[in-house]
Length: 277
Image (cartoon, rainbow, N blue to C red; front, side, top):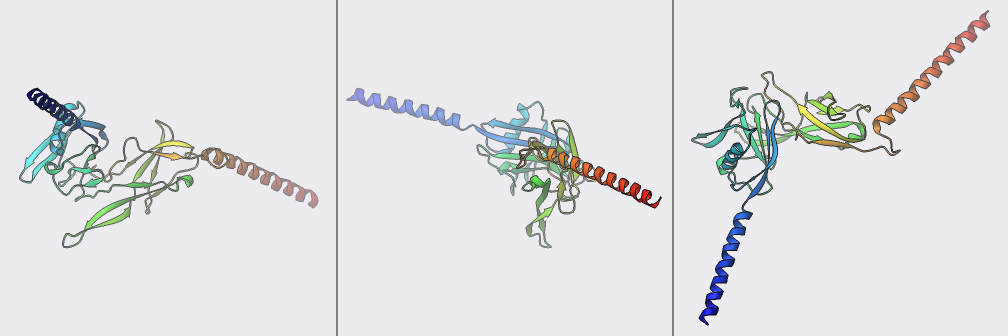
């Protein structure tokens, strides 16, 4: 009986140790990081870590990546990111600095109090929202068949008592790069409604990369860049032709019609002169 009891105890201890080992392995999480500097993307990748506090994860990311150099500063309000790759707080306006979002939303607590979970997404970006302003554009491509893209931003405004209200505004005067291939692109600028109209010659069927940019006079970014791999897909027309190709065909029709009309007019003039003589 004692041997059986000892065997059961040993088995339970073994199972407990294995469970602890598996649990420790499962504690590793994967977090998607995107870091947007003043003029370009600095980092865009998934980072695996065994820590969960945002401050500690950033320190670990800094140590693990050769492409990133971060300075995390301690203050009476907690830790904050003061510099990334030489881009320092206050370098583009007194109130400019490094901000962050978790899963697409601004945090109402500091980095020390943000606990990350597996699959979370973190965006670090440099901005001056309380100085020159800052918007986070979202692209509406529901009318891309007509070449229309509309950009809006959910902006937080405050009343006299600092009560926040979220208002959806168009993103005006923003440069939009529409890539026709991996290297070539056309630059469009959003109008007062936040819209651009891609010409049909550029609206070929397939996947097109999209990039946005808008800056203040001091060089500070005024919009959050899109993901580096952000793309828009243009479908083929009902007749199976590319939209751009269809447009070229119509242009040829217009040219032929114009030529025919011109010839007709010339013949009419000659006939009139002949009758007068």
